[in-house]
Length: 155
Ligand SMILES: [Zn+2]
Image: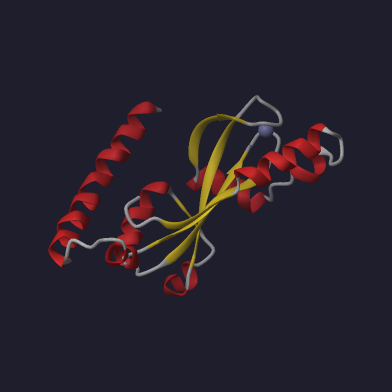
């Protein structure tokens, strides 16, 4: 996503948890503890992935995108589909996204990454002047539906 910034990757922490599990220092009950809310969010707003669950290996992981920020008001803390994020990113100045992977088979869940989205990211990294910003923003918005169609065709 064009306005994506300040990405924090949690794959190292995830690997550490899986190592602990393999070594028997933590049990599956400790790490497979997805709440009913998280599982509902995965069912209704989640993004299916091609990645197998590292614990049960029988289901593919689902990514849930949670959004946070003052501008969201009562929507803060809610899950959103991936397709909704570019629209929000063009509407709001800045909001935080937390991506959580969930397995509906064994309740494994872990934070994947977090990042910022929003219009403030458009003015940040470009030195080309305001005109290029406007054109670039329009292109990004127009490209979003095509990406969505491609994803639906894959299912
Ligand atoms: Zn699983």
